[in-house]
Image 1 (cartoon, helix red, strand yellow):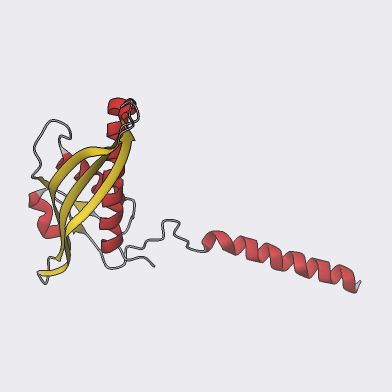
Image 2: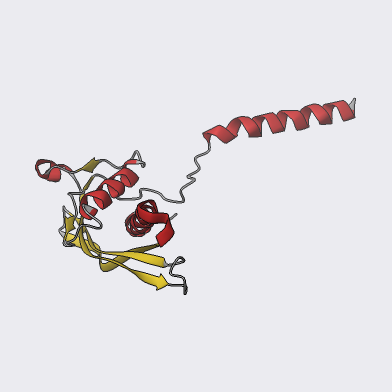
Length: 176
């Protein structure tokens, strides 16, 4: 009888513990919105020129906005007329884009290229007009083999953008 009671009690405790798990909050991204609130993110200025990587400012802005929108406690505004609705502002400028040879084998078939994008970011509290953080050298890099062609270049450029977005979000939304 005592053994049966122990099994029933153990089953009951396990059932209660398992039932409580779905109610526990767990953030798989390792980030929390903290005190970001509503944020104004206009399109990043693009100071780069050339035909190789066009619309970097737009591409980077779109990716940053998507990342912030994943957190449901943050509302993102982009239209200039909506700026007054936000508590914070994130401004960015794409300063440079470069692409260069990293390695080359004697047959010139194994050429590896590195793509690098440099961005300047300012994050400001609009109510106090205080700059919360600024960084003029946020960069991302990606590599591809010449044999991968345009698809390799686009993947490497995408890697650059992802690394920049990670850095911006990590600085803005503090890790918990």
